[in-house]
Length: 318
Length: 318
Image 1 (tube, rainbow over the protein chains, first blue to last red):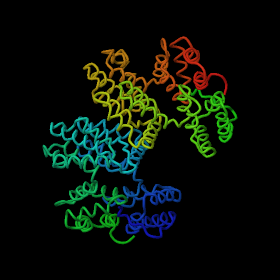
Image 2 (cartoon, rainbow over the protein chains, first blue to last red):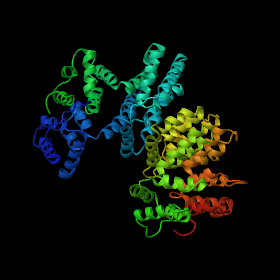
Image 3 (cartoon, one colour):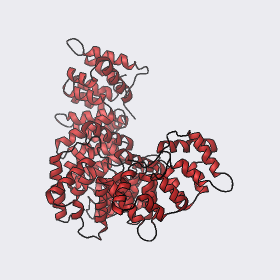
Image 4 (cartoon, rainbow over the protein chains, first blue to last red):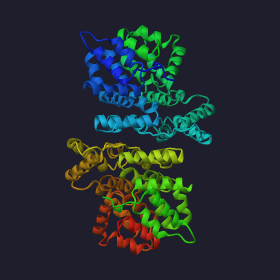
């Protein structure tokens, strides 16, 4: 369930565009108004506002926002405002451009937690924006086991109508997974085939069978070498595919752990999940951390950035 | 260029549906009428006829056709009549169900010769029809190098707007290909990455660079062991990606070679290319065989089946 709160009576896109334009006028910028409008509109509404704004004022709303606000607040507002598929394409492109191992995580996260249709829209948006294919850039950079895992996850188009599962298939594939893991063949074709092609309900059934038959979850068995980066990514992919709320709870937790904040991760999770499953993530967060996500955010961030994040996670009224 | 001939003045879909319904009435079936209508309508027109037929007579046109006609003629007419993406899904599914090595060829052919958007539509049609994903079934069956090659080809979404190429990339990737082939590493990740992710114009530039730098085409260098099934498939994939008319000419040639005819292949190529590039395939065929495709078809087939094929390859008037 989403955390996004949309008012019962939503102003016309032209009214929202006008109010935003007013918020940009004069000496200061009216950040509170920007937040009060954009944080309470869904993707379709935001897209309309952006369209109407361009028609009315001859400037892309995103460009206008970038001129007025800055820092983490700017990233949060602009990432939130653009279309989800364009946003994912942008996040993936930024990650790939960094050319560091941690960038694989964002690519994996997008590949494993979006619906089949949404993932395909990301690939279309990447074409439109970067004149290349997403998998082309990822495979150009990723090597070895990372490439072997990421490419099929990213190009997957899983069946996702209905929840029927084939239990005998789940049993046989649980055994395949177990055999490969027992042989420490963590990058084996069969592991990757099962994870990257089966529907999420089917995969869930397989991992339940694994648990039943072999007395432990597959992720426990994949902790052979806790420092192995590939194994970490593999475990995270499994979590994203079968229990995304838990995965996102952990990203949020780590982003605010200890001294300092990882604003990139915090912003990314909030803007990409507010319209999807942030309610469930908040529940997981509260259960795991004994504080609410709202109070954690209030403690770790401040100012307009904090206000925007809090509005997106459903704090206060629309 | 297509070989399909559509009359200048196309009857209304309701008129076509009525004429087809009449052709099915009484003792015999009016095969000539079926051919004269369906072989001269494009995909959008055929889809409309099918829709209108269902509304008017309460029966799917394909089901009605199957009751009236049979054999190779039936396969040819029904495969032609259904939507191209549904047809490809069906061809791929039939191929995979056969569980023989030759079935990989059809899957590769679909993966490498359809546009990015069309290939994705095939994957959507496969979901709708078989409640699974195409790559799920293919990867379930294909093993080893075959799987390694087919999975990324099938899930590819190549960039295909514009024809710009990066020549320095083409040079560096030509060298990668050459090094891997020199080391007989034919199933190497890098070969598969380049073939499965680069845009077709870029790939073409790379293979031209290969030719220039290493004095021979890549396919010649991939003839190490002429009996190796994987190498055959790899060469065919390269041909499909860069010179599809030549690939299809060869499939047609082999389908009518010697005694007997491979009707499956003949029908498949004619129905899948008539609306795409059959004119170019016919030119290639004529050049390579010194007889026209029409006369080869007339010599190898007969009756309604021959008439349907000939109409589709553009023989006679619409």
